[in-house]
Amino acid sequence: MTSCFNDNEIQHLDRDALEALQLIRFKKIVKQALKTEFYKQRLGSVGIKDQSDITHINDITKIPFTTKEDLRDTYPYGLLAVDKEEVVRMHASSGTTGKPTVIFQTQTDLDRWTNLTVRSLLVTGCTKKDVFQNMMTYGLFTGGIGLHYGAERLGMFVIPASSGNTKRQFMLMKDFQTTVVHATPSYLLHLFSEMESMGYSRKDFVIKKAMIGAEPHSEEIRQKIEDFLQIDAYNSYGLSEMNGPSVAFECEYKKGMHLWEDSYIMEVVDKEKLTPVPEGTTGELVLTNLIRESTPIIRYRTRDLTKIIPGECPCGRTHRRIERILGRTDDMLIINGVNVFPSQIEEVIMKMPSIGNNYRIVVRKKGTLDELIVDTEVNSDIISDDTRKLYALRDHIRDELKASITISPQIEFHEPGHLPVQQGKAIRVIDER
Ligand code: ADP
Ligand code: ZN
Image (cartoon, rainbow, N blue to C red; front, side):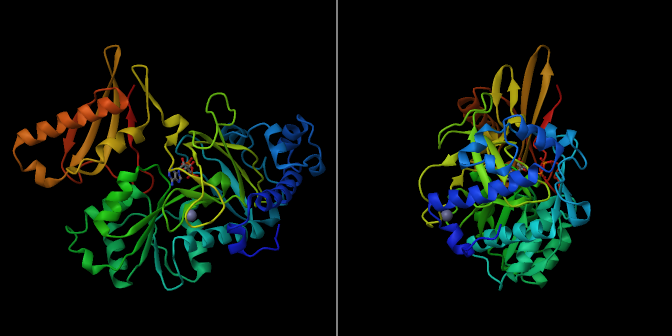
């Protein structure tokens, strides 16, 4: 699966050349997939018995989707397409939505994934002069180790801090003059809200950039991080089924994430009908990994909702961009018959200047009806102010939410630092129904 292009050329291939490269790689993946019983049946059911049955990249649409359930049903080794002795590592999803799913990597797989993470860091402007403090959890989760390998290969000074231990994070950041951090946006906001109480100030740090990912977050959350620290924050998307971080990454322009199409085939489909939607329309992202020989996964329904951004990025890279992830199809709440995504609520509340860094959505039954409660932290200045200001703010948020989601929730205010914080992915929704 090597190609005659260098990485910079690959990022700028025109569509025909990119699709030609995808086709070569896809045929190899089909060949690998046919080594597993699972895909032998799946592909066989649509008449694909050999890689030569694939003649055009669009042939992919004949193949049935692979779902999270398929990965669970084939656990542990059903999708392994190489000898076990070729495997050098395994990873698992965080298990946010149930039993984890596993994938395997050969040395070649790891090399290719690492090259992608190097590319991703480079497009944000990172260089070997940077000091990279990795605050993502290390372990089965791909977020930590994934970017670690890329940062190291790029030649950055890597601090494998992992998540949590706020005090130590600050100490490392100051003593080793960290310039780039990698964390979930919720953890980063939490961390910096503790800065003063831990005896630090912004001038103790030389941080310039943050790579943020692993969980949905609104533009408003990014703005908060950027404004508070005067840095650039880049959105990073990935999932273990597709290797992990570096499936899609923002470039220096921060106008959506380039999905690395030499390594993944992307489709966006209607989440119910599962038919393709046009560019610019939101749907479920479906991905095929083109670079992993050990665990081929074809047309994986990610359950993540996004859209392809039409048009070219000012950076000139040709790989199409996706919009920030709106949420997962299974994140959608149905409240008294109305569909609501937590991200819609986040967008409204995080626009308000007096709202703090953390929030939580609680849904419970009240009689026969559903009740929506939005718990949010407010900045300390407003708490000590006149209570009329608090009431006015509460009414204002309620009105804005009503206008956005058509539901008028109960709003509860909390002091800064009073809502629970996770070290990894934030838990935003408590559904008590
Ligand atoms: P799990 O599905 O158990 O959380 P992973 O740890 O592999 O598994 O996490 C991948 C998921 O995390 C993605 O499918 C997506 O829902 C979410 N995710 C990852 N990066 C982002 C991002 N930048 N924005 C929004 N959501 C993200
Ligand atoms: Zn770009």
